[in-house]
Length: 265
Ligand SMILES: NC(=O)c1ccc[n+]([C@@H]2O[C@H](COP(=O)([O-])OP(=O)(O)OC[C@H]3O[C@@H](n4cnc5c(N)ncnc54)[C@H](O)[C@@H]3O)[C@@H](O)[C@H]2O)c1
Image 1 (tube, rainbow, N blue to C red):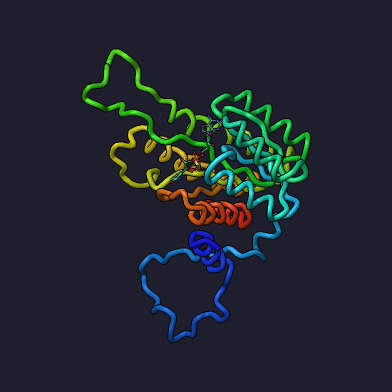
Image 2: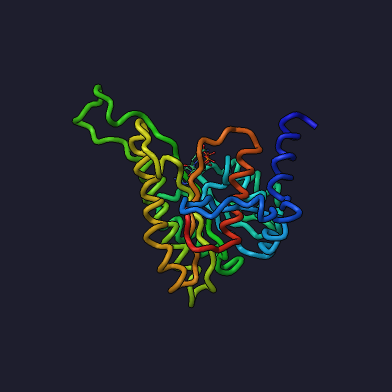
């Protein structure tokens, strides 16, 4: 086993292993008014109930999205996923097989194309139980560069891909998951640390990801209480190319998809 595989296995084991006993009262921290970190314990017992669920995920051909598609499929879910990158998307769907995964080449900034994908997915596997809004682009260029030509409008492709398209996905997810079309479910949005912290230089990416957090904050109470759809948002820090860190984020996504908790970032 290579060192990176060993590292990945150790991380998976840590994630899947609960401590045998809760800490004794003498080990527990004294109650204080300090805000406490939420505890997150993904486990196979928790996640295995995703078996048979229909998951729809955007941006599934590469990175976190591809890793998440694999994890959902490994837990017995049926995954509809889309991406601009059809070569990798088709290869992944082929690898997982037609009972586990369907791929469509869709540009998520095109509302009609996303709507068509949702409609075909529902026709094939019924309303989704989980929608993961993952597709996104990193910063492009420098719109505030002192040498930028002010006669030309700035390139806001990143805003379109990360926020406008995410609003499309959220709207379609809620429309197809809430009754009477569906039976409720979980919508997981993917923002970024740049969506909650100052990120000088990420001039368009930062606002786009703040917008995703804002969408979660606006939707979460209404979506859960009125429509039965839990809305959560994860805010990853920089993810290395290593499979371990990408898998970790995928587990987080799965956790929120399963837990269906009231929205949190
Ligand atoms: N990797 C990180 O360090 C990191 C950190 C914070 C947030 N994120 C967010 O996590 C998500 C996944 O990131 P990743 O690192 O896996 O990126 P990635 O580039 O590996 O994957 C993103 C996927 O989205 C697809 N995509 C982009 N625009 C699209 C469009 N218009 N229509 C359809 N598909 C489109 C890409 O083709 C790609 O396959 C993104 O939303 C990203 O902003 C990533």
